[in-house]
Image (cartoon, rainbow, N blue to C red; front, side, top):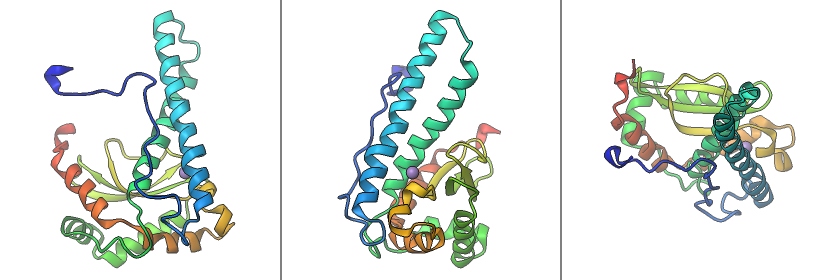
Length: 217
Ligand code: MN3
């Protein structure tokens, strides 16, 4: 891989990223206990299952027995997407009302596509609120179209556009909010908005735009 300057994650070598703040940093909007369970139990499980599945896939290739191929491919999509979305989720939040305002690139791309920041927020919150069952609201840069889009993720891996690069994600699985908000998902989402770390969204968006993956189609 030297020629490509890549450092690929070894098969079965994913690790749970540390939170970039204390478990109680998002209080009172997201309580410490929810963060502990969500990060140390739920996200850890996606990492563990992804690692296990990658090893199982290697064993499948080594043995030439592909009887479990459908199960393995499904697990790769589910757990891999779960690991990626949670890893992004932790970084795009910060203590309430300290995350600033959308950066210059974020504001420009949001306004040019959604019309205004208010229209963007309205669609994002509605998308998050109306996810059927467990899932996410995702603001993503689509390099094929060279613009942003709002998508829902059903579970972690369904309803996507291929090749998107998520820059802002909101977890609306019940495990993200149930201890404090019970069935009041809308209250959670509207409070969650005050946690957005706009500098991190801007950093991710600049990276996505510069990736120049528009040659993919
Ligand atoms: Mn979650």
